Image 1 (cartoon, rainbow, N blue to C red):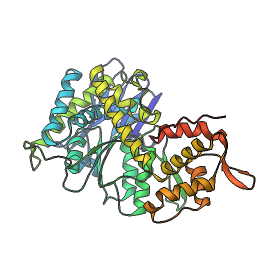
Image 2 (cartoon, rainbow, N blue to C red):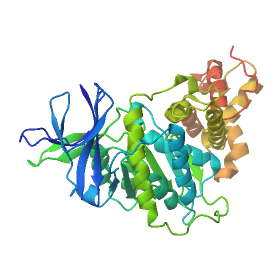
Image 3 (cartoon, rainbow, N blue to C red):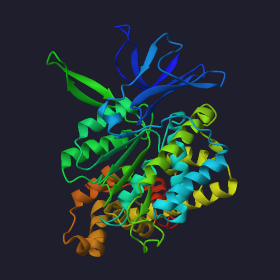
Image 4 (cartoon, rainbow, N blue to C red):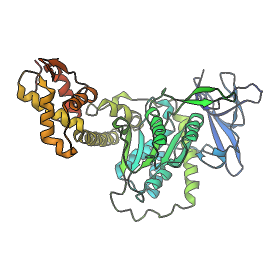
Amino acid sequence: MSTNIHESKGTDRTGRGVPAISRVCSDGTIVELVYDAGRKRTAFVVLTPGGRWSIEQETRIETGERLVPYSPSNNLIANECVLLPSEVIDHGSKDELVEQVRSFIHRYADLSPQFETFATYYVLLTWVYDAFNELPYLRFRGDYGTGKTRALMTIGSLCYKSFFASGASTVSPIFHTLDTFGGTLVMDEADLRFSDAKADIVKILNNGNVRGLPVLRTVVTRAKEFNPHAFHVYGPKIIGMRESFEDRALESRFLTEETGQRPLRADIPIHLPDGLKTEALALRNKLLHFRLMNRFKVGTDPSVVSPEIEPRLNQMALSLLSMVEDPALRSELTDILIKQQADLVNERSQTLSAQILQVTMEAFAESGSGPVSIREIADSFNARFASDYNRFLSNKAVGTILRKRLRLQTQKSKGIYVVPITEVPKLNILAKRFGLDEMGIAAQ
């Protein structure tokens, strides 16, 4: 049985074969599309179960299907909107390949040393991403003119089947391209101004880091019938944006480099040289060899899970850390993740929910062993924080935040709504998540 990584949705009804992009088969066969721009030809690199590879114009796989390469005249391929390798070049050792990728990124993009390491291993991860079930995203965040686009172009030119898009792109081609080609979405200006387009991009980002969560969209058939279609958007993503997403859960999926935080390195070229394209292609050819040799060898390494990191962040970073074999480097990257978690916790501690949680905990500390009324919590909040919002919160609004955002139970007691003492264990768990002290509250 083969794993349909990315291919056309057609069948071999005409006898001309099924146009395909990639296949990974359970018997160890790997099929990858390559494109020779000079000759304007596409072909397959086929790795057999025995570990030997060859260039083929067609191939038959274990399912009995006869696969043929996508046409070189396909707009996405011919116009290099999707970047493919052109052949296979032996990558040598993994350490040698890592150093070549790192040197390429260092030459053309000005990143912090830590994020340069993240980006280097992220490039390798993109070439074997389908061996994992969860992925992180890379993000460059900053104002215009701070190097976001340069970083996207540099790193994206090395990634597996990179598809470049911008905030000006309509969303439909992005869905179709990801569904058909897969690979790595590289998107600039991801914080779109138009709310409907932004909502669609958020769907891709929310569903695209976990395998098996397609986005359902309604398409119209030739018979003018509406027919839901599952678009598969799982895969690596590198984005540039000026601000942050409002969805805090989505924010936790990113490894972020803040751009424009220091002067530009003097050795960074102002304009990308013509030779970059050739260099990037040569590295993609080596990275294709890396995929062929390692696709069935890599996988999730549970030993890299850090108890100091929240489960969500551990889950997000597990695939990337699994690519790093050096224990010292792995520890260094884990420290960076711990710092990122601390930043996220600090941001949470400044939110409205955190402030209400804080006054609720203080009210319980003062009450001793009894419940705390919603009115008491609202009065304490308004006395301390109302000036920050230029308004007072009603008892009802505070109760809604306690129930809907903090997921605390409230109940009616002697004619008033209270938070019962039985909710104290939840408060202590929430305190850790929001970066607050537990204050020694004990459940009765």
